[in-house]
Image (cartoon, rainbow, N blue to C red; front, side, top):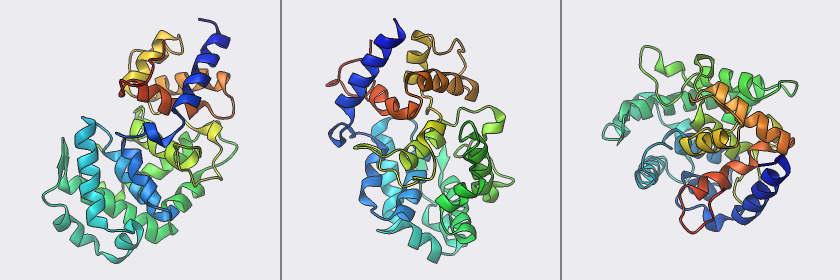
Length: 258
């Protein structure tokens, strides 16, 4: 398939899917309830961290956590002592994510808010517009959020420097940086062209079929290769195709990308 034909098909699919009518079922839908950016950041890191497994269970798990945090998750975390988070989420479970895991994640978010003022301010401190991608900023961001996990396993915050594709974290960044009828945005100081594709099995399969990568391992290297191929199609916003392509793998009422 020629590059021009691929671009035409991708653009057509993007314009078809660039509407909130196609979002459900997706953890992204929870972010729409937060007009304040600080709350959307907290809701986004929770929703993206649990974005694995069956979508019905994802939505149930995200809803249960956000319910505990109330209408303003950032205000809640500023006010609750760290030691209470373990009690609040003692009964929580999402596949292999335990209540302790969630409490430690939220403790990390709380500490970042206390130290920097917001998750966005923390990311901004380590983001540089001269970087080719957001990878250096993401690495430092994960280091900050992971502080409470010292001595504990940490599946919620994989480290980019270990080769993980960091699908969930790149999904979070897509939500925070891009702004259209689907992605709510807010971090307008990060250029969309710096984003990395959130690499799931569906995107990996499409990337291989189109020749964007030959790597069979869903690693950061593979994510960067697919992103670079999409950047050649749309240099300013390569990740804009992510939502449309992943929707076609979930909803039967949308055309498949061929």
